[in-house]
Length: 112
Length: 112
Image (cartoon, rainbow over all chains, first blue to last red; front, side, top):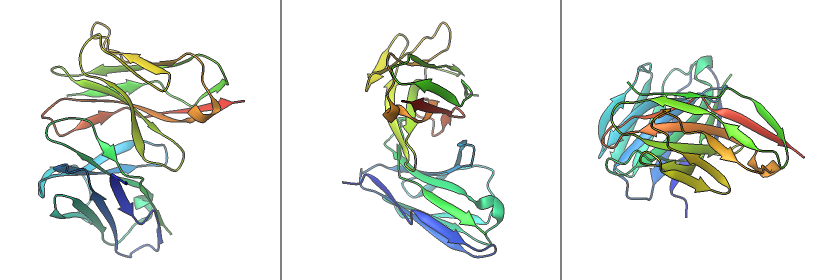
């Protein structure tokens, strides 16, 4: 059983388009995250939601908008895609105050 | 604030060699420490963790000891295999703090 799943796994699109990445977790966790991993493998937190409420919003362009319809889902919508948005985006979840993260398989976004 | 300094890679070793990947940290309070592993094309998986000073985390032949006096959590394995080729991330987090701080990752390649 997949604990944290993301769709799509690969996303190739043109500059200026709008796209969404979906994330679901079936672990019953109450906190979900989006991370961005660049080509050098550096991981950066983007957003964190706890029980559908935004907790962490790092310095991310406002073209990125997370949406959490319920505590099992956290989607990421990106407007007006730019070349620099090309990266692997990871969804993750955690429970309560425990620091351990459970990661999804990642979505590789390529902007042409 | 919290920070993690990780040995820069890439690291290339022959099969059955001894592995050490250094990780040092600065933190407030009493953080938990983690090693995550990312195999090619996959998301991050927890490899091992330690929650207090002098704890040793171990899994799949890997070990790391939480050393408060040297603020270190070095990853070791006595005899690496080709299947250990991956990127390894050191991380720390405090209970109640939404942020998990990652190191920059170390790419490990094992050659037969």
